[in-house]
Image (cartoon, rainbow, N blue to C red; front, side, top):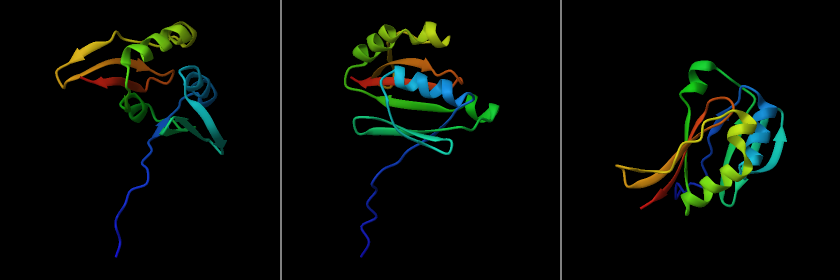
Amino acid sequence: MSTLRVVEIKAFVPARDYALSKRFYQDIGFTLASDTEGVAYFRHGQTSFLLQDYWVEEFGRSFVMHLLVEDVDAWRRAIDDAGVAQKYGVHVGPVELQPWRMRDFVLFDPSGVLWRVAQSV
């Protein structure tokens, strides 16, 4: 009998400039584990996603990723220390308490993909 056990789920994050996006994600702390035929596999600990060399404006501008972390302040400092806002011309928001009982900050990648980096409270 099948157990319907899930092993993993990964999003395919779109990239307008694939090479630039790969550098960005490495600069914010992800490891590039593989890069084959327009799909780059990124990981950080047990968390991973796929970056695709594919872009459709309407889709990319509405794409959102949520990264749940143990220490949102440490992540925000690491993003600042990496200088990604200046280096890539992206917006990095302040850490804020949200009504859904999380502290988070927003981070846009070079393509405009929105990331919400959050910690449960």
